[in-house]
Image 1 (cartoon, helix red, strand yellow):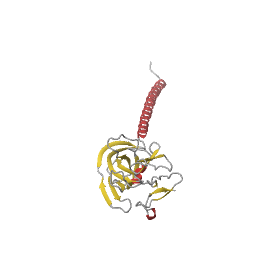
Image 2 (cartoon, one colour):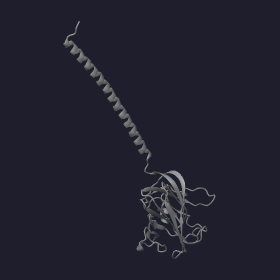
Image 3 (cartoon, one colour):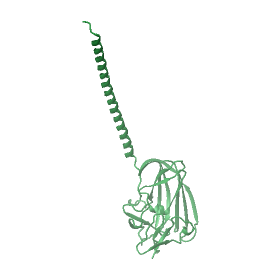
Image 4 (cartoon, helix red, strand yellow):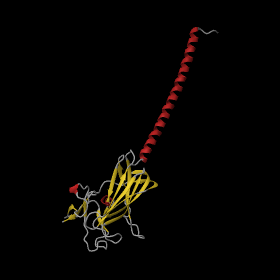
Length: 278
């Protein structure tokens, strides 16, 4: 039987509506799948970012180069224990960043101990971070080096004489130069030597300790070598105070400038150490 025009239009409309509905359902499924994929990729991206952030510690740096600069420092009194000629020794290590980017380097101190001796708790200090500006330079002097030993596990060490290495680790090659001066117990400088420190290609991941100087009164203080030992002979040692590490004096004593050293705060000397007097 021949279909009426009305029936044909109705069937045609039904077919179109069905087709549109199927297409709409498929589009909805595709859109949902795309949303799901987008969410998954976004979640993966967020996880990767979170993982990268969790792996990037502010107290950890990757380094490529290592330098070991010799240090010899008279601190509380002229050196006189027999390993070096009696006198006053000073070291300053200059570190220059030759790049055009700000970098963070790591430094620690390794004491030179007697051959065959057992390792002690203060032979090697934790690493501290040093920030170098583009084309910037810093100087690490004897009293900065002594500051690496305060505090370590709640203990600060007052050295009569300190000998060892300032170990520097850096992500890039640096310019490292050591300057050594020496003189008799009293008087002006009598000898000076300048040495360029060579680098070693050593890759390492270094965890940094605190770069802040110790606070006055922080840490239990011990003497090295012990007072009354052969290193002091019959000379009463000076109690160092002040300086860049802000070493405090014992109770009942005050910190004044040490007139026997070559650092004069009245003439622009920066971070001059003092001695404790009653």
